[in-house]
Length: 446
Image 1 (cartoon, rainbow, N blue to C red):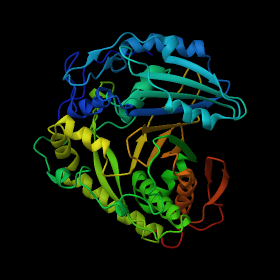
Image 2: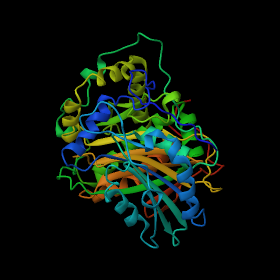
Image 3: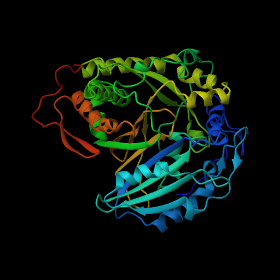
Image 4: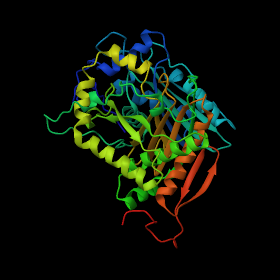
């Protein structure tokens, strides 16, 4: 597969491309201020798991050496205070693509990857580390990139362009509506608004964050997730969020505290098809209230779906993006340093066949890391027939490692007479219901 150089950046309100060495936007410059103030930069992580016998390090390095020169986003940095992208030094494949054998300690080694410093400037701020675990029969690719250069959707497109054997459609592109649609609702509901702690922090999780991230995940067949959505006449994203709500409710019960509704922040992408490989952030944060106090799974789904439908119909994404681009980067940065929200959630669907040097992935995840003060990041990444829910949580809250399994349990409640076939360690899978069980389950829509 040949990679066509995309020399542009995401900067306009409609996500269009700019000229080579083009302008950064306000969000890029806000993330870049972490460098200026000596703080650890915010990082986007992308994990791809493959069978243990897949490809060699030399083969992977050769692929990166061939492809990286055609991807502008992997050759620029956002310089604090500058309004244009700065060309970095060329990536050195030996330093940017490394490997480690981690037999018996895959989870610990994965968490250690996120704590490693990114390559220092003038080198580009990204790297790729391969973890080979014979005991779990997994070869894991961990890609990291400075958030000042690209967001999660952009990272998913970049990794596919960098590694995949054939072109991959990747996450669905944003399709701007007709010009003139706008809304000031984003400013009024803005994630910069302060909310009481009991509306943003799960009960029993009020201790100070340590700043050290840990990850846990669960896999379910994507066909099962889509089947649950179809049975309720809902979208997959709404079902995912309803299950997140159920998981957070169950966690609060386990903490022995009264359950409360929680406000979370979720990114809404404005990355167009034309800008899929361009440097720059193209997502704005939106606020969602998760109805944890609603006891019935169907009621949670209905409450979440009403909110997402309202977001889609309000012009919030279009008007909010235009408003965000006008906010001074220093103000955005202050909001990142002292976030009003402690939980985030996202959903990325990497569509199309995906093979790397002949190997198909077993599962994937995309998430954000190192955001100061954040307690947890819930991400759903769908790729290669697997839906993986990953929770990046602060190590000061070890109970959060239970959330992926609780999410699977909440999804099983939505599925009705489904059962959990595996729930060992950090990985859980949802089995289809027995063929003899009638459908729909009680409480499901007719």
